[in-house]
Image (cartoon, rainbow, N blue to C red):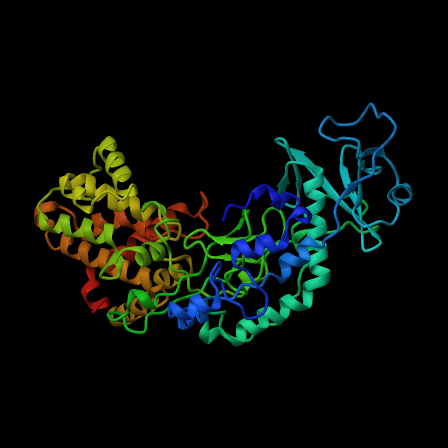
Length: 505
């Protein structure tokens, strides 16, 4: 709306009323409808439309404006050992007791100093709430770094820390209440929190900053941003193997730390995302923007957008299915199988003989660039087979997922045929919906290839050698278990091909 993004670097200088008017942000129950009076809304018949728009609360933005401003305490003496990337705020190697005397008690006062106990390491010390905070800082590639965050200047780094501490102190209860209210109204909202009861969110110290206590000094390498537990990978079972609809598929968001410019708001709690850099998380598949705390609340309801997913190879299978699918499998896989089967199964060595390397690379680039699916018609059979195999190999999560891998491997070792088929059916139920449908399409296609082995010489044994390591991948592979794993994979795929019609019926 014509607002200079550079203002964000010094939020204390912003005209709050101007910003709110430009963004259409108001406190309370007022909605986003900038530049329109109540009478005009009524005349245009917009009342019903406006009341359904999301309400964005500017409270956190107002709190950020009131955060203490950094003020460097200059060193009046020349220090010959001062690094080139520090200015007059550098005070050399001084003890913490001396730091207290230099800084005084005014919030925002800061200095940079060298660690006494760990020469070559530098600390930022500043005053907040009448107390002195100490943080290990670094300098890499022209940026001042702390906890994974990068800044152009010490001033910006200090300001970001002061903002985080100030918001934590002034808005901790408010944020917990906002998230709790969001859970209570999950039925009315476009985002569904995770199932089950969730404990109240506790804001972590300084939103990712970890203060150095006196007992730590700076003797250890400090993990400034706390480690997060790996997200639980959900197992999505199919309610009916042949009736699952794409729109019912669950997919977890792929959140990554993101730096925003302008005035970002959280899509979950509708509050301002404070700070100067890495203010929150953005889903790399759908673009959902959330706070650090709120990303733990969002359920597996990602709906990928082509704006963010710009290729086909190397992309999560569920993501591709939700973006563009046919018969619950990615369009590329469906089209590839259809073209191959339209040509018949007479090509000797299909899937065993590799296509021309340059042709495979050329068609892969066309597919990744969203070229028309009809380009596959022009590729020869060996190139198509190589493309399909490469697609399966490059999946981030293999077609048979890590969680389901051992169910398939154990099922193949049973002696009784009916028990083995039953165990394979149970193993298939462990797969996510998208993986189940794609595995079914691939295996039944290979069943048809194998049924014409008299012409193409591709028996179930030969196909299993090719597709074993392509469909199955153990979570960890070592030189010691490689050969054994490949034998297990080959046996499992061979059984699936030989009995595919019974297993998937």
